Length: 173
Image 1: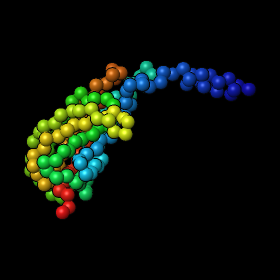
Image 2: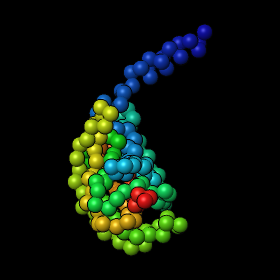
Image 3: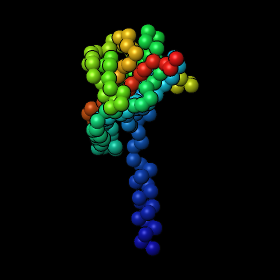
Image 4: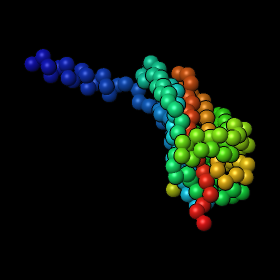
């Protein structure tokens, strides 16, 4: 007979816990490199994401090594290219570093390491609002990108940032 009141109290306690804030992402978004003819997910190699869990803050941190995926996202230099963040929340800051040559067998950049100019813009995809960093990369047949994005933590728990690597290359002719 004692287990029934304990289970009931537990169910009531869980029901009374505050739910997630409706306008807040509780984990890092996915990111895609998008061109006119192709798209591909980035390799997420580091994330620090804080979020509120009731009266407490939880911090998720993962760290690794960026890899540049094979095959690259197909892209013709001079055409549109963007990094799409699959979230309705605007990043507070985005930094894009570009490398214009690399070793495709090893998947590592070799030349460059320069900032890539970009402009944040809101886009609608399948009825969902998302954010893109529209890039102005140098004309290069091989492009390695390192992207770091920061969001404002609306719950006051700390840092929210994530980093990805992407690779774009010429369309096969």
